[in-house]
Length: 147
Picture 1 (cartoon, rainbow, N blue to C red):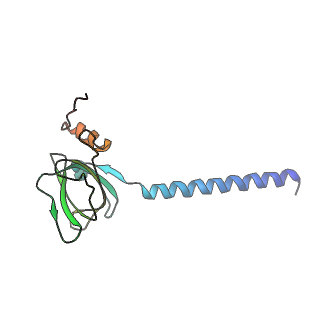
Picture 2: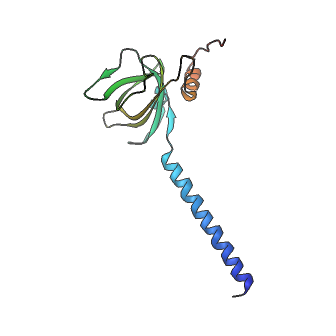
Picture 3: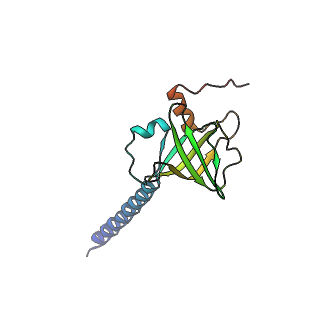
């Protein structure tokens, strides 16, 4: 092999290694992706069984039921549709009725959304961006006046 051929083979091997690393990175990121849905979007979506999604909306009033241990069930609504959610774990301190929430998980065999994480709103003016955008699109969200 000449010096030129050796140099070319090292460059090709380096590019191949970088392409493989980039491909594996994008594959791993694609596996962790979870899409955001509002309760009204669930009916129209073609979700595969066990597909991880983020479900967002408001905690429906009167639906919080505490089970044994740290199991809690509640409903997430966009004021038109609602989805029953079960969660086992410690809820955020700010979790309560009629507040913004994003849950992440998958639908169980009985049609109940089984969440493995729950995120609650931050303060009286904050709403997670995805939830606020979804509620604005449905015409439910009213802007609060800033001081």
